[in-house]
View (spheres, one colour):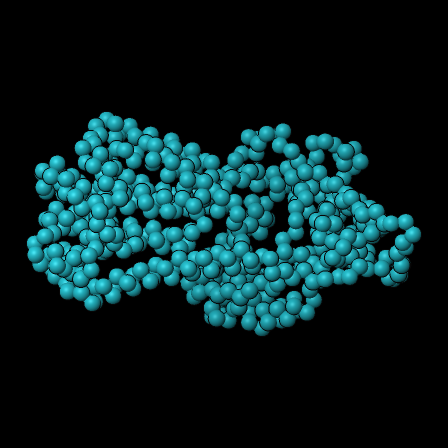
Length: 506
């Protein structure tokens, strides 16, 4: 999640920079409107796109994390550790063991939700204020828009189909037609839809520091579009410019509205006389394509692509680790990483004495597992229990320094539902192999069942070797209600913590 957020922020910042450098000074208002909105959507989607990088393109110079035995705290002279005997194994007295429950993982999500709610409340309050003004004021139909006549002295502004102007000025014909034309352009071109979109996006993505700059750029581009519409209908451009200068000191309007904004008057006056040739416009539009391609490459999620057949072949054949291969520098190494909080077992507040670590390594060494490359299935139940008793005495730092660790057991698989359609498909198509309650049955047996007779189904595609052996391509495992209830009860009753080695780094 952290990598997604960083990629989203950086990608949106890059595309906004491109806009200000190459597009913001060009008379490409409609294209710029699309580009700004597209940039935000693009920045949100790119980090979830997965790009596979062939393994051969990965440099051999990438550092590989080796297993390093954690440095233990030295015991002060004169201190002794009491011994205890568990079964046939000599263990050392356990340090105080604490639960791994921590509220730290909920801190950042909590902050995110609180701030998002504050932005949402602000948005709703602004909508409510606009609604109140509409209901309390006189409304006049103006074709595609509705005039809302306000008693207070405000700058003309619009939202959705409503144009807000001063009642006294309108009744005394003091509101220039260019002003009404400007606001009608906002209404006709649906600029409020862009504003609502960026406001809702800011509720979700408030952490992105570039969101206010996107909002400002989008609203300024709206002003350019409205000015363009006024100049098209009222051809006296200098007169309209003088009108803007004359009204530049009027009061502000509400936050959500498309405003007759005089704070950006200088830019608007410049852009009214700005022209962009078709050749320049085409070059700049085409020039964005490589920018988007680079952004997609930089901020997408990249994974290494391996040959599936090669991995399957290696997994099916047990490999005996010889001493020569063990010392081979090209041999894959185990990668150390912190155990996720949801999988972490019990641990000690303080570091365990180094003789606890030595006892843990000694048991693993019996099975050639001290570096994680032996056969974990060969470890006896007694030694597994002894390893667990030692493991929970370690601190988080010491546990994360082990290549063979314990983790919390998985919960039972949840219920899911199938349908009448799929039961018919599995019954008739011989490409499916069907198991009910762990037993292989003929496909036709499904005619005796209804969809709600099953509490769970699993569906998998077989490997080429398995297809050749069994004759069908897909395997369907179904659990009846009674079987699932028994499975759930048994799984919850026996949930030993799992002992497993860390994955390899290719």
